[in-house]
Image (cartoon, rainbow, N blue to C red; front, top):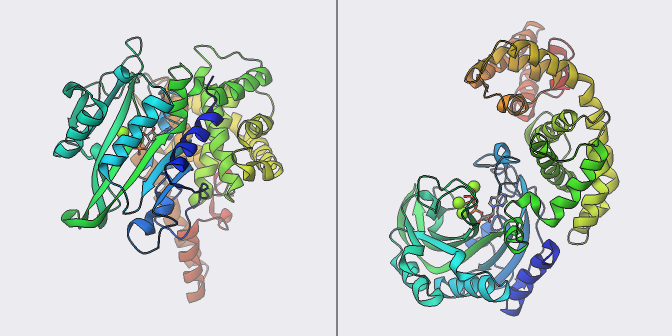
Length: 469
Ligand code: ATP
Ligand code: MG
Ligand code: MG
Ligand code: MG
């Protein structure tokens, strides 16, 4: 059996043998990059190397990078538990060439590792290339011997990568695994490509151009390579299952949550077990990297993820805090690869337990209000923004938790109404502050507080203020 830990090791060993420096994962909070909430790809810690601002650690590198996609440009939060391939926390295995080898070697490495070292069946692999990238098309044909109908040309941004509107950019090539005709979904580029039959396992980015204001202005003197393979997705394939949550790490966590809540995973409960297992990973790793729950910025994203999982624990019938009791299993699964996780175990346990105990005080009341307000609603209807805001402000329900709670009834939430209610409360708070005879200093403080989050402004929130503590 290929354990997830063995597969991570096999990937890094392969590239180490090919003269790549093995670089440890960077923390999830990006260093010196306020533009990004969390590290969401293996190349993020190397951004300044690719732009030429920093010198590379070596001409070639490889890593297994912790990633969180739960906000900003890449937000997979709503997919988790409902697709077979999305997680909020995952590990991205990557190999990088900083102006060293380029397209041909990158494709050779990917193909050799996938089909020889990892032993993937060639006839289940399909690749995509950017529609104008004849070079990549020809290389896949000659190196991999793939027939032309399994080298699919894609014209969308899915196959064109750019660091931002200014900076390096280039075409990419994605490798897909066919999970077989028992799984719904079509090949990349087809109308039902979003199904889980053809799952993208590896993305190769060929950084070869420079752009300014979204226009290509020329070629890089020394093109580079950035690749990303989802560890949990390749484990899924190598362990012969069809869903990331059926791999060893998740199976072991879900076994424990089944025991603790005394609810076996079945058709009705499986999504909750999966959400809990995924969110346990993202919240624990975020806490280990220094993020704590709060009402602003990164801390609020953490709180949203935690509370979302905690509602699912409640849904499974947990009558006391659950999340913190899963931490030992997570540490035994992943602590060896990530010693920081083990070192932070006591802190993670305490933060999770405290947050869950606290949220449980308002969760039930909030759910009751939600039931009352949606009693008359049917599939296709939408919950008013004011109610969603009340749930947020009084009962500490993050917006997406409310959305998630109504999801299986097909009821949506009026987001504009929610935003408007939030704006109104902020304006009222501002007016109240001015009314108290604010000095210029107070104005400045208010601006900072608003930018950084209104954590000191609990006095303005209407009732229990749970959402704004
Ligand atoms: P998808 O199209 O399936 O959402 P993506 O194109 O957004 O994936 P990339 O940004 O190319 O993903 O990331 C590189 C690799 O990381 C992917 O090929 C995939 O194996 C993995 N990956 C991306 N997002 C996730 C996720 N939410 N959960 C698990 N693995 C992921
Ligand atoms: Mg994606
Ligand atoms: Mg994709
Ligand atoms: Mg991709």
